[in-house]
Image 1 (cartoon, rainbow, N blue to C red):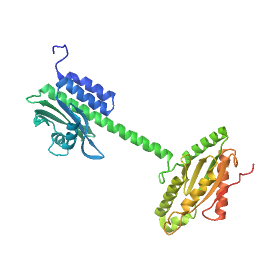
Image 2 (spheres, rainbow, N blue to C red):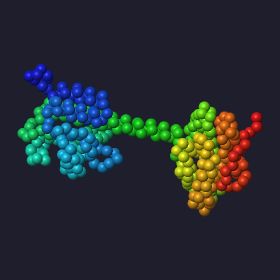
Image 3 (cartoon, one colour):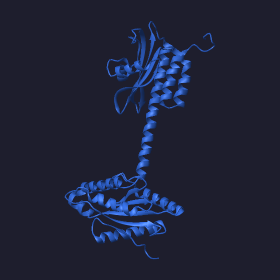
Length: 338
């Protein structure tokens, strides 16, 4: 026992390190691990470096007893394959009692350990952890067991953070895919339908207007036949880009399937926005030797329709009128009787 009544075995500090890993994010966990090491073994310096799947080499993740200039030097030094942190990470092997020199020339004794987790029976390297003590220093068996356990906890923290990041990215991807058309990146039919319902309800409460327009790519099937599906996809992406660039921030554009696109435009400028879109698409360069144009039908709430279903039907009537007038035109619809 130590004179202050606390256990002298450094392994007792591991409970604090475990709490840090369980209770916080990666930065908090690694800082807690280095603090636990300081409490248990009193190193002058300590650092954790991790591999980043998106960047080469090791990246400095946490330090103890190292000022900013020294940390910057360490971050650069690990690019050297002979650096002890890099050796530990690449060889997946620990080294103890390794002598080195601080920036001020002070000799220190270092311990360097890899961060490794085993997944499906395969070792996955995640980085390395290291500590340094002023020489002379001898890390005894209990101390070696402690830093080895700290390395295992650091690997666990890094792996858990990576899994959480992957899960978040996957969730965000599925969420995005649930609301967008994968080919064009515009809102999909389900999302547009929900936005249209909300905008019509809001316009009804506020006594304002909202326009709904349907765009159909002219002669799209002919482009597909003559240029192939790649040319057809190119046309759809170009039309989507022109739509997105021609609308206001308050507007929503989407693809509802095939070669049909839609616009939800709050306020009274729906017809003007629709005409601007038609003109922008007509200015696109040809694909497979064929010009790109769209026909469009427009309807307004409440002037042309009193509910969402009638608004959509009226816009479709306008689209039929536009097709009859010739490619690259827009027309307002007439609400169906009854």
